[in-house]
Image (cartoon, rainbow, N blue to C red; front, top):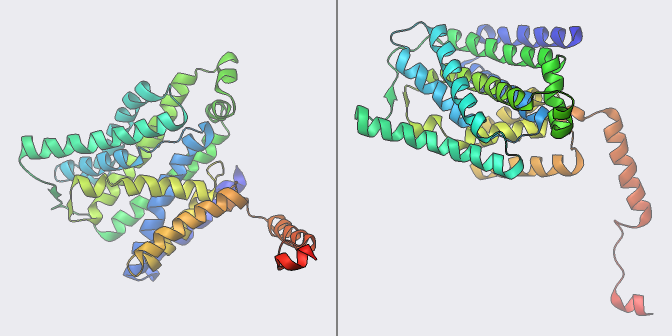
Length: 324
């Protein structure tokens, strides 16, 4: 734990210097890294441990963003972010009580369906009740305030993951992921643990959404409830290593750099790169990028040499030569 906290403080100290020495582009890219680092780390804390594939990140992100947009004119910045996290956590607890008895594909589909339900409910409320479409953010904090807030949320998400993974609560979630029925027979209140873990993940997503909403001067349901936010969070966590501590943060940096490089110039190539990285990690690196070691590359080299000796890469003989 001491080593992990030392690494975290070293990374936070480096990130703290970016607004003072980096350009506007560097700060914007760092914000994206921090955003997906916080989202994927908090997602992995629950889903990586319990192996429940949640696709509801976009719903909690959007709830936090709308909470901030509605209350920022009348409440302080940190209070609005706290309320965004609280509302997302409450909705997640209600949602979890309804669907966390399911697993696998059913749970993933239902969480995605509830995300769409929340998005359409917000859209209906805006059109039919308030008579507006979207929200204009008239009060926007300064750039450094937003950056420091996102840095604090990312550090808090990783620090929470460090502590929880070594606690009885973290062991209970890991037990649920390994064998839920056995964990229940050993005295773990699996329903309560799952709801609490799901709400904790949602709280971070809601806080991140509340902080990042001010990057846009205008938000609407299609923007902040974008399913791509949730899908990319899941991809980052899986490719980085959902069961690891630093994997999601490493993958968040890689994906943010890849996104800024390819998304505007070649968006299709960016999506193809996401798919290719996911396929390669599933086939050859199931532990994610965080599981890369020197022995991993050595093992790959040994496999290639063994296949070469076995004749896998040699040209196949023509049919006539085989008959002869």
